[in-house]
Each structure stands twice: as structure tokens, then as C-alpha cells.
Image (cartoon, rainbow, N blue to C red):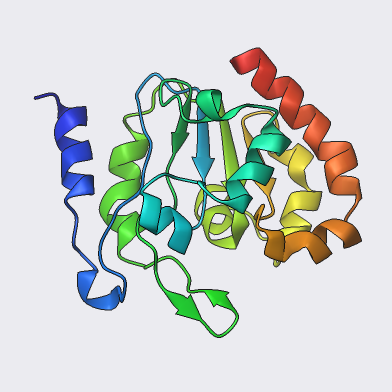
Length: 191
């Protein structure tokens, strides 16, 4: 068994924060050392938890649209890795899903990122992933996404593609008009 294979088996068997997960443990990741693109998201939602397939929901539909890829390309782990900040569904709070569990990233993230030597683009989705990956001092997701060119072409901060962000997208119409065409061109070149 290779180091990568053992690491992936360990991640899939992880129960580090089981006592905090009302819906149980079900780590959802997609990773292959050949991947050139990394999607660094927040944490799986309930639909993803139930299916065990990353972005298998309306958020995934919008993310694939933004990227300009179909499902078969998106789920080809030799092309695209998906590592949320928390691998399991954290549960639901008053205004949506809870934040990613804080135990997950320190336990696994650096070990897994070290297994991705071919990365050329990281899509950094939402404030938890942006805080971890971008080392920025922006106070909001909007400010971070507005400064996308300072991270380009190796990283791209994105708002969460959730339908809950429809109001944000309406208020920030520049995002889909300005950023998405660059994203689609870059992904087309990488794939």
C-alpha cells in the first residue's frame, strides 16, 4: 500500500469529531495526485452527506456551470481534487449549515495537500477556506473575491455557489461577468 493509499484510507475511516456530528461520520473527499485543480470548499451539506458524493447538489450544479465543466470531468479525480475544510456534514444551525469542524483541517489538510504535486489552480470557496489558503487580511468574502486578481492565476477566491447566495450574486453582478470567463478559460487550458 502506498503512502497516498494509506492516507486516503485513514481519512475515510476518520472519526475524530464523531461525538459532535449529529448525522454521523461520512468523510467526503475526492483526491488523486494527478489532479491539476483543487476545489477547497467549506464542508458537505446534508445532500452530499447522504450521497457521499462531493457537490452532488444545487451548489455543485452552479459550481460546474461557473467552471464550464460537465459532471464526468468534475468527478474525474485525476483532473479535479475536492477537499473541503471539514470532510463531514457538521449539522444545521439557525441560519444554515454549521461551520466546518475545527479538528479536520489540522489533522488532515497539510498531509493531503502534500499529495497533490501537480496543482496549478485552487478554487477557494467561502470564508473558512479563504482564511486557510489565502493568507489575506480581507474582512469579508466579498472583499476577498473583489481582489481575485491578486491571487490569480494559481488561486481564485469564490463565494459559495449555494442558492442561498443568490442575493449576493445579484448585488455583485460583476462577479459572473468579470471573473467567470477568466475561470472558464483557465480551466479549459488546464484540462
